[in-house]
Image (cartoon, rainbow, N blue to C red; front, side):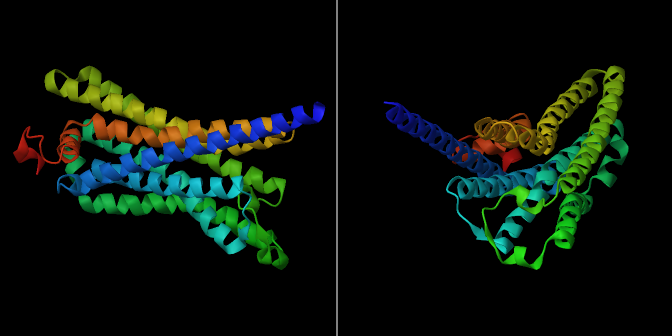
Length: 311
């Protein structure tokens, strides 16, 4: 009887984990479809890909798509215990490490764009031109690559030649050979966290002052910008908490393996999937012009409100 109960318990556990994996596949597929629709809308109108805030929005969408796709692949590989060569795991790690930071850094840049638009309107056209947007994206990727470069440099200096020839079950922790390397990675993440938080608080404070002094249409526009910054702050907070997840998961792993599995699943849903679904809401639905263009595409051209403004 005890053996039968053990078997039933094991089957129940496997079914639970399997259901969780299926749920992740559904959520990832849904988010990728929504993001693909928004990216299509972005490229359908010249105004969008010549305006900085929409260019940065598209950058977050592309970043989120690639990040969700790669994390889902890593999840499947880990779940089925597939071992791969180190070089392939290295490619996956580089992509994930880079785009873990690209989204929060881009959100910070979008907050600064709103700050310039509201607090420095006369210089907005100069500072937020199309050329400046492309330079900003290059800077975003450069800043986001710094943590990856540091971690991999330490790894290459520490790993033995034999390690490179092994087949491994790929995970982010593969490239952390010593505990002090984890502390270095954590310190870098917290430094980024601090800089981004300071930027958000500074921008919010300045926009709040302008909102109090504004009147009429300017006050309405400023309040809308203030709400956008708040949504960015909330989304950024979720993204940045993700940087602390490895510390929490490692602490839980030392005490309870099953709790570790559940905590990691919760972190993935809350701090990886959830922040990526907020981008479509902030600009895809709240932005009136983008919403009309999106509705026009979804309804296959049957939506005729202000057609001259759409296409």
